[in-house]
Length: 194
Image (cartoon, rainbow, N blue to C red; front, side, top):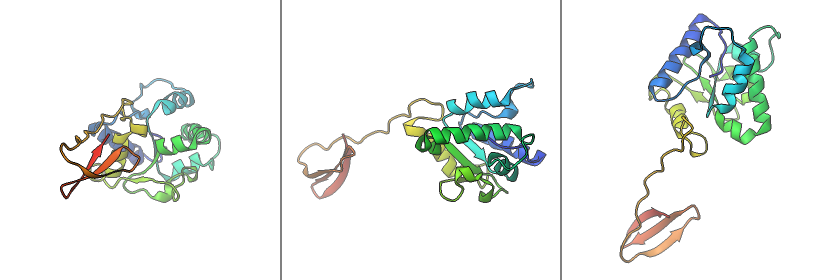
């Protein structure tokens, strides 16, 4: 997760959000869980961001300013470093990283707090109403689906069970080119996959 320490309340909210995601089965990498030793946060971001299935960019006023380069160099250095990595990855492969960088709006925050380079109005974002399955439904669906059919843990997602083709006399078989076969058997329409 990429975010700024806007306030003790916001920092705690991000930690609570990470705890909620872990309870929902998502493997979370957060700076607050790192050992209390001196860190090179830029190097940490260079290592962790590319290996993550998703990067959650947590909207807040300070995060937007830092990520969009609107703060002095000495402020929010960690967020500036992480945002620099994100911008470079977007330039390198925009389709892939647009799918993997997920702007998230936590309760009490606003879409206008998403950094401009993450397209708050022209690309998807995820509003989390509460730290419940229902309150984070769209985000959890994306995280659980994973990029290109991969699970959040990076393992191939299990294949969905496919219905078996009908036996007997099948009439009016049509394929849509995606592997689905639409069949009409005795007046009943069914969909089968090859």
